[in-house]
Image (tube, rainbow over all chains, first blue to last red; front, side):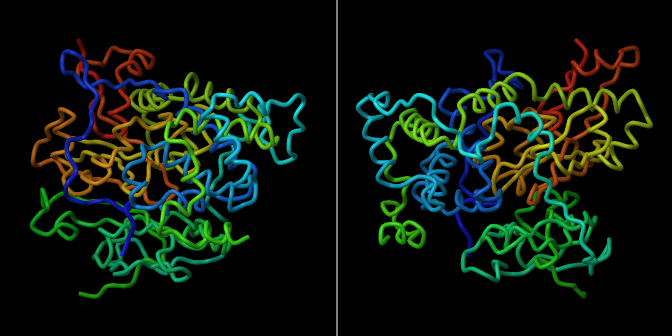
Length: 246
Length: 213
């Protein structure tokens, strides 16, 4: 079982929307944001995230949990906005009644009526002066722990054959459906990283070994495979994997 | 209270989600939310401006192009880049958000690499900026892992059947950058001239560096 975001390998999608110029050449440059509202949607999501009330895995899971109908119909930054709104409400940073008031005012074009002088910034708010520093730090997911990896490079593994989240039905996971129950080879061990399946549900970071695993195209796609030499590599946490013996 | 309970636990009907309260015009949606957050002191409008300016004007594929050009002219740098990409890229002062753990994969006459994120839109921000629209499209996300050769042909890239394609699906927090092959006939070019040839798509694997005119 999976959700709509887990679309790797799905049939039915048309040509890639590759932008081309009037000589039919592929265009490599496009503006970072096509519309101002997209820039704002992106920036308020980052700034609200910096309040520290949720982590990256939680915000990803909120986007995945949008109703299927909305996930399909919304454009990229509309998904971000919708998930952000749900998060802000669930974390009590904003309330439904005030949201409704602001929405009503926005529709009437009189949001100005709420404008305030000298708003006191919340202690958690991300200051413009700190933006470069915080971006530079990022949010590394790697953790120093004494957990040793149980798989070695070159080991044959078979992935879990069903959604591996042990804590929640339909919970967050980073093992895509197309690579469930498939045999692959451990290509590299990338130290221990925060485990999204727990972190997305507020159950702690539980850092675990993260491997890059190589799957032959034919193993994943059978007769639909384009070329026997091709491989697909995925970054997978230890609980997604089991030893495989021929 | 009962209203809030619905929002958290009922993920079946969109009407029960707070986001369904938003107006249909995305511009109004953003405006309402932004104004509310600013009035509550939760976000500072100057921070939004700084973020947008940074990714519109300072962080973008021109960064990755410098990394690639340096690897083309400096063998020792290339070794470090393939061995520990995060540190090697930090030598050029590119680091941080969505590039905390970098991996560089090298194209050779026998191997062509291409990067995708089937589950969302993971992309190496410090070296490439924010992802282009096609990278985030359902079409690219669904098809690249199953039929990379067809996908690449839509970008005008046809590969010899003998070349192995390696598709990297960014399912964790490792961020991938493709090191394309240096174009022929560029032996006399210096690093900054070479960087001009490195296209964004060539660092994702859906294109090649520009050939000499």
